[in-house]
Image 1 (cartoon, helix red, strand yellow):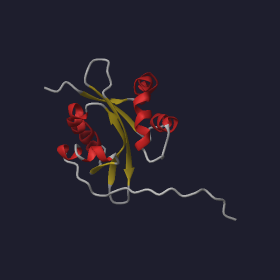
Image 2 (cartoon, helix red, strand yellow):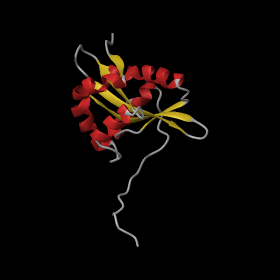
Image 3 (cartoon, rainbow, N blue to C red):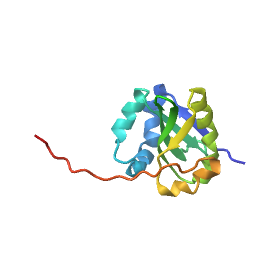
Image 4 (spheres, rainbow, N blue to C red):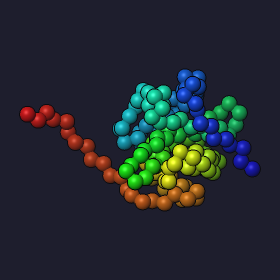
Length: 145
């Protein structure tokens, strides 16, 4: 039996919850494609542009945390998993059902997860499939006149 729980952190509790997830989120930022830092994430969550979720498998212990955002495209509303980090993913992988229910209630018709290659082996167990590959190239910053 799995005793893990998915907890969506309300904005009013962000200041209290942040110290419990900050280090874990920082460790996951190396896979975040340099889109943001910890201060950015905190601000986006506080401004309700992103959401913070935790997986707790033991009382008082955060086993994993996730940042989501809801993106509205012209033809589809998508829940995007921006950052997913934690330990013993097999223990809390099935908590995906909570995100699916939440996103569906908001009118999302799909969830996209931008994640590191290691998760490619685990996410199909809960219904995800690879649809794209993200490749990046750094562009030198120059001033054009």
